[in-house]
Length: 215
Length: 215
DNA sequence: GTCTATACATTGATAGAC
DNA sequence: GTCTATCAATGTATAGAC
Image (cartoon, rainbow over all chains, first blue to last red; front, side):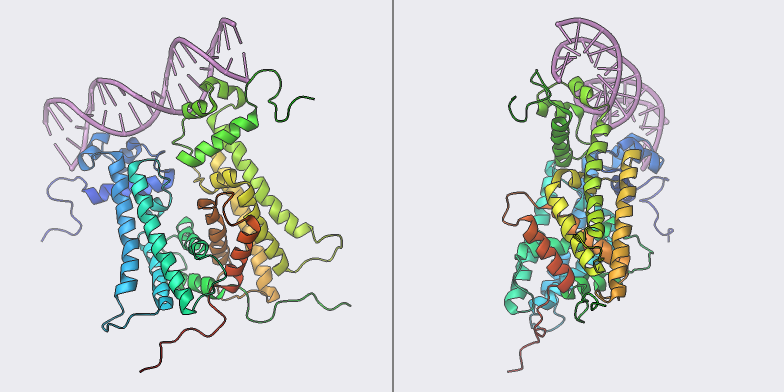
């Protein structure tokens, strides 16, 4: 048996996945546009043209990373809908929402680099616009789930569902800005915190503090 | 009296502020790095060198925009602390927090372009790093305020205050991703929504939905 | 799978006239 | 305040040998 994690075969070189990992890390560090193929080559310790052996273009690197992130995210929705365990009994919208939110946090944490890249895409090229379109579809489906949960009576309905969806995922997505693996919070704990804030809010159930009585 | 909004005097040309506005809009559209001075010139209908008459460098444009956003944001904290109206009675931490959150939403909405730009800064250059440092200071002060509110008994204290601050401002900051002036939500309404979700959560006060009784 | 060498466009910025 | 002309540097990508 060959050693673990050996590149394709023979030779010292990289495979596509290894090049992509380094590229995504650099894209997140400097921004996609500010990252030249030359610095990728530097980081990999190979020449620029060696990179073009693995990928047709710089944008192809971006496309593959974005697809990875989107596929993971879309998987969360699919699993929440279709995995009520063994029986056919459908879950309540509230329970499916819970799964989606926790699942999204887990995807962010586990696919941190590619999701980070996805969340920074602005739509300048076709590749980016396609990625944004897939994100919008995801957001729409979550919004539909929120609406279901409201009709079920589980969620307050005094705020526009689209606004709620955006605030919710604004909160969740912002995790990529600060979360670093190995920190004190693991993904489960973080998901608990998100759910706690989003569903129950920060205010203590105790009555609000009033100004102290006049002296 | 000369007409309103007339450029400096004589000549058709732009002043610094007008150039900056166009630049910030373009930076947000394409990303700072992907925006060339040439496209700025195109949008302004002047030549590249005319831009360099107003600003020493492309980065100076960025710096001025970031400073504007940061100054506005810092003002929110200062006002929340120091503006209890006319009397010297200090506000509760909960009330100051309320002011800060609402104030932040208003700054986002009113200074949308420059704040958007600020929130996308990654720290590649000295200018960017200085901006990030000011942001961190702001975040630290909000965290301190959150801690005060917890000690006061107004907020739940089972979640790390730094995590709460990040989730809270993750939610608020994400507004720049979708809010467009003239939409159905104005800043006040939006601030109400943010406060509602953050403090009271999405769950209905009614008991949670349970599975329907067995048939 | 990697290399050197190179093509060729675009970049941020400057010089100096009007 | 704006222009034309120009610069050196850097950008993405390719050719062809090993």
